Image 1: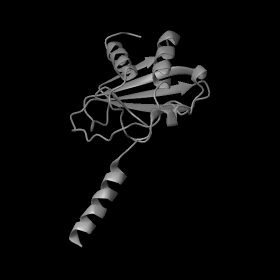
Image 2 (image 1 turned 30 degrees about the vertical axis):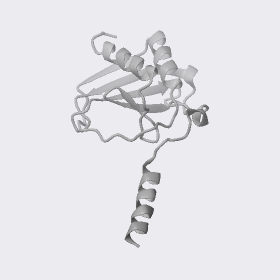
Image 3 (image 1 turned 180 degrees about the horizontal axis):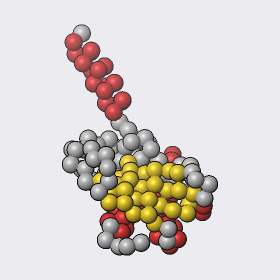
Image 4 (image 1 turned 90 degrees about the horizontal axis):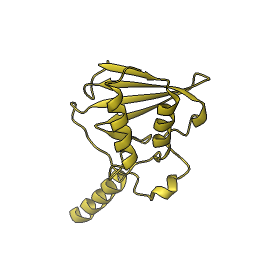
Length: 147
């Protein structure tokens, strides 16, 4: 009886904790920025936080350069809305918040933690995708640029 109860509990635990085990193809039409019209994004705000628990960013950038906006939108647009794994981060993890604004005042917010995009279902991609690496490098390089 104890063995059967243990097996049922383990099965439920594993089943409830397997996030995004479906193939990426299931989410092909849902990207990270599906709520906004991609061609209408006029500004991107980037908020850099020293840690996951920091409530105030140590640096902020407003991006209005159309070429940079198009690159960020392109990279985010290739990422599905659901990830593969859940990650428990330490409080020291770096957080970057990306806020996309369109001409009507609508916003969409994307969070990156330690260079990984947190999907709308709060999971992450495994393995890390090339688009995430490129996006992280781009955002990190903007820290040192006056825009």
